[in-house]
Image (cartoon, rainbow, N blue to C red):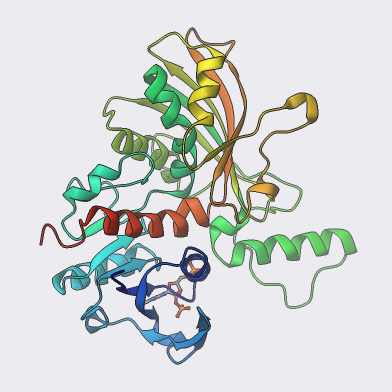
Amino acid sequence: MKKYKLGIVGATGAVGQEILKLLEKREFPASEIKLLASARSAGTELNIIGEKIIVEETTAESFNNLDFAIFSAGSENSIKFAPEAVKRNCVVIDNSSAFRMDASVPLVVPEINPTELEKHQGIIANPNCSSAIALMAIYPLHKRFGLKKFFASTYQAVSGAGAMGPVSLDQEVTEAVSGAPVPNSLPSAFPHPIAFNLIPHVDQFREDGYTKEELKMSNEARKILALPSLKVSCTCVRVPVYRAHSISINAEFTKQVNLPDAIQAVSSFAGLDFMDKPEEKIYPMPIYSSEKENCQVGRLRVDHASDNGLAFWVTGDQLWKGAALNAIQIAEEMINRNSLRKIF
Ligand code: A2P
C-alpha cells in the first residue's frame, strides 16, 4: 500500500493533538509525519505511533516534499502558509474558516459530498464543528424528504473555545464549590461566567444581530448541501460541558414526512448512530459522544409546529467529527479517489 508524507500545522494545539491520536487509531498510511507549530514550540518532542518526533517551526519550506498538510492553527496562519504549501504541490486540508466560502475551495463532509474533492485546486476546507455535526443528521433526512429550511440551537462545549475553555470552567467550578477565589486565576476564555451558566454568544456579533458562528451554520449548510437558497436560522450557545456539541434542530421539508422513513434514513446513514428509546431513557448526550467517531441522533419526532417538519437532537465530538476526524477522513477519501494531485 502506498504511504504518504503528512504535515500537521498546529500539532501542539487542541485539534492537532486529536489529529495525532486519530492518525494512530485509524492506521493512516503515513510514511512520514512532520509536526509543525509556532517558533514557541520548536524543539518540543511529541509521541506519535510509538515514535518521538520533534516539533518544527512552520515556514514556507516546511511543505517541500509533503503530500498533505492538515492545518489547525487559526485563519491567519492558514492564509499565510496554505498558498506556500500548494505552490510546493502539498494538498492542504484546512480546519480554519479562512477558505470555507471561497468558491474554488471544496467544503467537504466525506459522508455527504465526497465528489467535491475531485474539484480541488490544492486546498480543501473542513466545515465549522457545529455545521458538520448538524449536517450529519440533516443530510439523510434531506435525501429522503427534500430540505426546505431549518432552525437550530447549539449547545457548544467549552473545549470548542480552545485549550483555555476547559481551564476556565475548571477554575470557576472550583471557586464556586470552595467559595474562595482560586490563587493565580487566569483570565476567562468567555465573556461571562460559564460554570452553572449558559452564554448565548459564540464568536463576534454582526450588524443583523446574528453571530459569525451562527452565520457559518447557514452558509456552510447551503454550500455542503448544494442548496443555495436554503433558509436557516441558528442560535449558538456556549454551555458548561467539557467536550462534544449538541444541537436541537427543527427542519421543514418539501415532501410529506413520516417517522418510519425518517428513522430508516438516519439509521442507515454511515457515521451516524440512531439512539432513540425514550422509554428506556436512551437518547444522545454529549458526555457519551466524547471520543466517538460517529455522531448520535435521537429525540426524532414529527414537528407539531410545521406542516412537513421533523424535530431532532444530534450530538457529536466537535474535536473529532467537527475537526480532526473529518480532516483525516478527507485525506483518506482523497487517497481512495486518487484525487490527490489531479488539478495542479
Ligand atoms: P504553538 O503551540 O507553538 O503556539 P489552539 O487552537 O489549541 O490554541 O492551538 C493553536 C495551534 O496553532 C498551536 O499548535 C500553535 O502552536 C499553532 N500556532 C500558533 N501560531 C502559529 C504560527 N505562527 N505558526 C504555526 N503554528 C502556529
